[in-house]
Length: 137
Image (tube, one colour):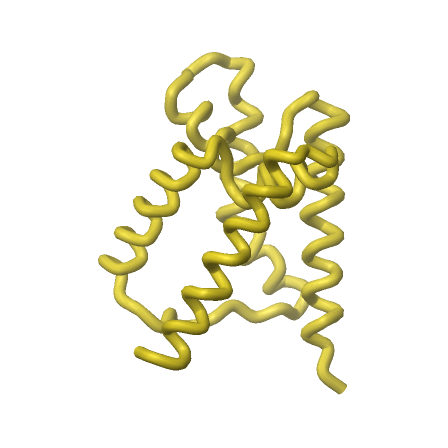
C-alpha cells in the first residue's frame, strides 16, 4: 500500500500545527519570507525566535531520518540553477507581499481575500510551469 498520502497529510498537519503555535505563542504569522527577512535585517534579542524557526526548517529534515524517513540523495538540477531560482522566489515574495507559507497556510486560514488570490496565483503559475516542463522541455 502506498503511504505517500499519509506522509503528506502528517507533514501538512505538522506545518499547520506549527503555524498555530507560532500565532498563539508569539502573535506572529508563519510566513517564512517575512521571518527570514526580519532575522537578517535585525539583531534584536527579541528576534532570536526567528533564527530558531529558520534553524528548525534547516535541521528538521535530518531529524526525521531518526524516525525512519529518508531524504533525497540528489537533486535533478545544479546548484547555480537552485540559487537563481531561490533569488527569483525571493523577488516574488517581495512583489507579492508574502510567500506561499504566509499566504497559503496562514492567510487562507484567516480567510484573507488577498491571500486567497495570491495562493490561487501561485498554484496556477506552478501548474502551468510543471505542465510546460513535463510536456515541452
